[in-house]
Image (cartoon, rainbow, N blue to C red; front, side, top):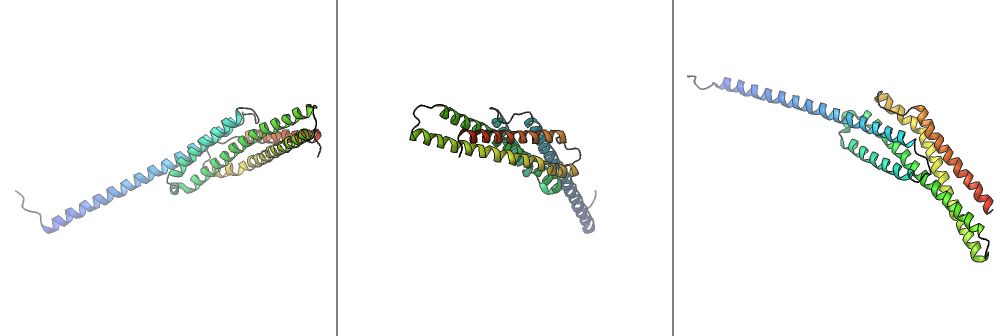
Amino acid sequence: MRGPLSVAARRTLLFGSLVAAVVLAVAGAFLYGAKKTRDLESSATACAARATEQLRAASGLALGAPQTEGALRAAGDELERRLAALRAEDMARNRPLAQAAELYAVDVQAILRNQADTSRALIASGASRRALEAHLRNAAGRGAGWIQRALALKTRAERDNFDARTSAEALEGLLKAHRDSQDKLRALAPRAPLIEEAERQKLQQAAKDALQRAEDDLQRLRRLLPS
């Protein structure tokens, strides 16, 4: 039967236990850190990929069509939730990638929301112009009230048209600058799914077409009731 351990033996056993505990703690911290890094990189990649999907889907929507604004607003709201999930990760684990993915998604979100604004403004501009046209066709009783109503409709049509032109111009600018956020993400994540240049140009052309539509409306307004 063994006797009690000596003081030296107890110290050796205690030291060995402490070393084992430290090794386990370090290994656990390393594994936890590796998992958090993977979680961040996965969230960043997923956020960027979904942003690209939404932007690609937006290229198939006609600006000024009845259902377009709602679809674009929903896409922007979903992307906001994706961004919130990304920001909830430990972004310090890979800050350059996290910031590049965040910038890219925020850029796409701004495009989607501006597309929605442009689509809404185009509809409003067309509707207010048609309301003015209908009023001007009603020749009966062209008194002071009729003139005041015509001027009020003209003011509203011009305001709505200004909103449409401003939104379309801003949208074109955002799409032109979109290459910058693409390049930053591509440099850190070469395999990240991004829209092709031809797709970006298609979206930019749609913004130009929207601006031209608003410009044409403005000319029709000026012919209806000259200043």
